[in-house]
Length: 127
Length: 123
Image 1 (cartoon, rainbow over the protein chains, first blue to last red):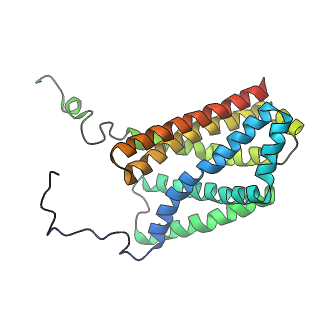
Image 2 (image 1 turned 90 degrees about the vertical axis):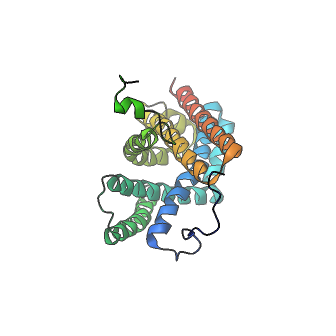
Image 3 (image 1 turned 120 degrees about the horizontal axis):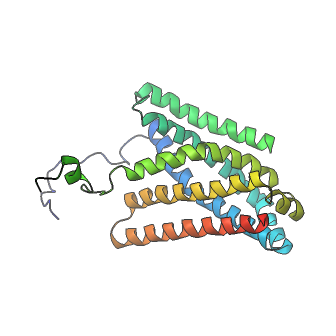
């Protein structure tokens, strides 16, 4: 350890000390949704491979993805995908040092949350 | 040494060595996915739930197949970079290296598998 004097330095407040805020929740949800999307991605790759293999393999993969459990995963994934997409747009805007004021950041947060729910609804209705 | 410019001496330094490359890579792929993801949701989404003959015929068409292929390539690249950032934040030391290698292998393996499946249906 290069820095041995750890005893009396001020500590930065840890995550657990902060009251959860819209900005922190929407931030961590971006990471959670992005990484959780690995699951449906692998399921879709499996489904594609099964379709390329045989009718029997496809029947099993298709059954798994369209069963009640599969449909629940897909519904959650559609929301996660829209959420991560909208949150990504927010980051693309922030990258230009625009909209970083607390008031606007909160507005963006609500747009991402409500927008992702609306887009999930639209997707379910269209498909 | 006297012949080096300031920029040349700074290149490759700093804790990340590669500077803003990773950030830029995320930005490029996220803009690409902004177009690909909605296209993929509605093309793939219209195929899922259909029977075997329909699905294989559907993915032998250029547009659904190309959208799916590009989404797989850019999506798994984006996932690899994003997941690497998460691992770098939470896992340290040798386990960090193992996790990053694992995520990288998984991303490319899944990408290649998906592309193989699409190619098989197309040809």
